[in-house]
Length: 303
Image 1 (cartoon, one colour):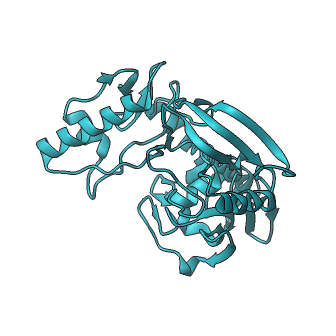
Image 2 (cartoon, rainbow, N blue to C red; image 1 turned 120 degrees about the vertical axis):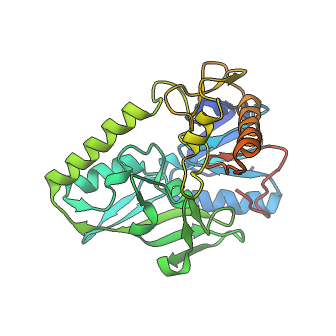
């Protein structure tokens, strides 16, 4: 058995809607929460040998999971939270909450993550998508990243070996983040905490935090705003099934209660088609979608 002798929580037929901030998804065959990187690596290698599909997710804050569920093993990194503070540096495992890390750095008077105080994802996911807000992004603070490669080995990559762009990291679809080292600069503690508080107020005022969502659905096209284009095209407040374009911010799709993955995907497709037709702009999604139709095997990592 793949999970024999492994520490950590294991659930069978576990609802994926409990693993995503969108609260969408059917039952996963097996869900496993590794308690350390060693066990995660062991399960990966065993699954590779047995050719069992493996999926790895964090806090699910930027993720759409399938209505039909997932076969194989879904590994959730939220228990990987080991952290080591250094001299204006921190080494932290992938499952550590980004917002919590930002707050703790700010309490120390360390500057660099003020923008991240309101981002609900984990540090591992933040690296993969180069999370950002308020004109800043996580790439600016990264010193090195330890990843799990497709062959089942761990490798440390320096910042110079990685490529970043707007909501992009060269690790996406290539490897899984296990640990990250970030660097900070000395700052004024009170000013840092004030900035983070102001960012939280702005987020609460402008985003539909009262309903399940996955953050911004589309990337902003160069020189424009996805939310502006979607609202201008008349989509604000429109629904498909239980999925609705937020009336508060048009670049958010909210779950009104019983949304399915198919509802969200249909709404995304319709918005993209309409915006392209009206403005000649092809929107690109910022959220990730996992489908059991595209199985991810340990021998052939895709997500």
